[in-house]
Structures are given as structure tokens and as C-alpha cells.
Image 1 (cartoon, helix red, strand yellow):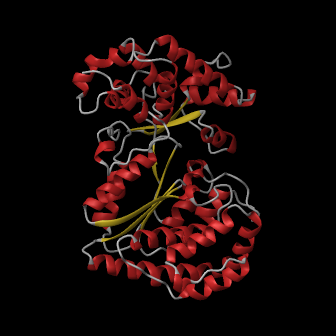
Image 2: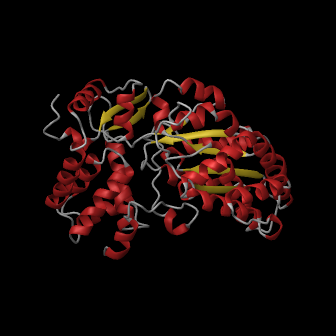
Image 3: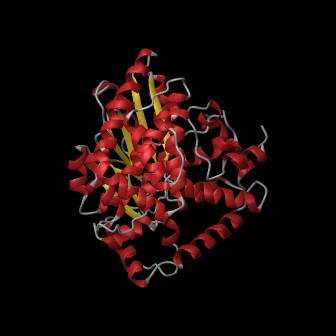
Length: 433
């Protein structure tokens, strides 16, 4: 069997998210749940299908950006669809400004995506509440919108498109919508979601699930009300996000797991957030975690030779790398961060044809390490030494910054969470324990 270099290059693109519902993508999927200390997607799915199939649920999902959350959520979507649910999945970053979001933006985005998904299967709903609301908004934004002449999702899309790139118009719209938030929420529930679920059940569906991805990417900026944006959205306004009358899964910023507001967040949603940790390449005592490394190696080799078992593909490693040690080095230095692993691999195959040399890999590692170290202050190096020594972080803002910048990774085992520094930094000359 020979390596198909063009296809290998394409499927190693770190910006590509595997869509598990597609057979072509599904062949590249590796299940890391056995080493991540918990079957999180099964837990999310079970809450919907077993515990509360006929009652609305709201769940929170988080983890480092690039650790594989989108792939896992798309797997959840595929599994729920197989069980008869109508699932609406969308990336909030496609329509919202991550630097400036309010609750009404999220609610309108959900209404738009749900409506668009329903319209695609010939379920057209035009909530009466929004007829007058859109007429007044049209006058406010000087944007002609006639709900009776366009589909509901199109009307919302016109509004959001008009305001997305204009902070001034966005502020005008928010000032108008803010006192009407509860009315908008009630209308979405009664005039959209309730009717949608009834019509879906008439078509044989078990219910409606909405998965909002990429909200974990909202900027940690200070809002005019005095709260940082993640806390403002999910803690101060979390009660409203928790009131949608369907099954909802929100991605939330990882920084909330290390803030003083975690307790209030849990109380707002009456549920603990699920955290997708890194794939461990070592135990917390520093010893090698061979099972984690082996799964990461499989992630690479299944992209090179799809359909070939791990046992067989081990004999094909030298078609991709000059030696098995080079593949193992690639997996170790990634720290179990899936996107980092693919970025490393992608950079190598941009530079030379397989089999990839150890020299090429080390050259890319040095460049990435140098780029990372430029941003680290002496005080942060001291914090990194503490993390490496104690395998823990505190809830202080300084530590939150290390996590947000992916200088520190979180892992989980049977004893709970533990932390270590990004392996790129562990080899920097500035880092001395």
C-alpha cells in the first residue's frame, strides 16, 4: 500500500473539522474517551435521550480551543439524529462578533438557525410577536424588512447582517431589544420552539436539540456593566439562556472554570459544565502514558492509511516518517492537543515530502517554541515553573491568562484535574525548574 500524498495533505489540514455524520470523515475519527477519563459525549447524549427526552435540558461544554470539541459535538449531533432527534448545530462565530456579544444576539441567532433548519424540511413558522418587532427594528436601522414577504430566518439574517460590522447600529439595536429580552425569549419559546417540536413530532421526530458551538471563543473583555464578557453572558444573564424550551448545549469559555463565578454558573444552570481535557501523553508523576501516545499515533496514521488497522499501519510508519521515533516525538511534543498535533504535522509536510525527517520536525518545533516564548514575561515564567512543579493552578487571573494562551494544558485522571505546561515551553532555555 502506497501513501496518497495529496489526500494525506488535505485531511491533515488543522482547520478542517471532522463531520462524523459523513462516512468519509468518520473513518478518520479516533475515540479518546478512554484516556480522557470520561465519556463526555455519551453523558451529554444520555441526559437528552434517557433522563429528559420530553423535557427541555440545558448543558454546558468546554475545553481548550483546538482540543476537539467541535468534532465531538458533531459526533453528538450524528448520534442524536440516529436516535430520531432533529438537531440544529451551528458555529456562533460565523454570525456573531466574538468581541461584543449580548444575550439577545445569542437568542436571535438561535431563532434564525432553528428557523432555517426547519424551513429546509418544509416547516415554515412565522411568530406573530416578531411581526411588529421587526417593523420597528427596520425603522430603527433604516432597513426595509417585511416579515410576510420573507421567511423568518431571512428576516433575522437581514437584521444581524446589518449590525454585525457596525458597533453603532449594534448598540442602537441592543438599547431597543434589551428591555424586551424576556418578551423575545417568551415568543421564541411559545411561537417558535413549541410549534416546531409539535410539527417535528408529527414527522416522527423525538424532539429538538440545539448545539451552539464556538461560544467558548468569546473575548474575555470587560463589558460596560463591569463584568468580563464570559461571566456577563453565562452567569449574570445565564438564567435567560437557560430558559429555552428545547434541548440546548452551549460551549462556554474555559476561563469560567477557573474563576470565582464558577459556583454561581453552576447554580444558574443547575448542572456542572463538562470539560474536554487534553489527551495525556504522560501521567501526572511524569511517567510515560503509552496508551495516550498510541491513540495520537493512530490519529496520524489513519489519515495516512484510512481503513487500515493500527496493528497493520505500524508497519507503514516509515512511509510517512523516517522512523517510528519521529512519529512518537511529534505526538509527545503536541502535549495531546489535537490541533497542535495537526499543525505540527501540516507544517512538516509543507516543507518536505514524506517520509518526514526528524530534522524537519525539530526545525518546526524550534520555530513554534521561539514564537511562544516571545510573549511570556519573567513573572509568567515563574508561574509556569510553579505549575510544572505542583501540577495545579489557582483561580487567579494570572493563571487564567496562561490557560487562555495555551501555555498550560489541563488533563484529567481518576483523581481529577491536573495541569502541566505546554511541552514546547518545557524545552525552552528560559524554563528551568
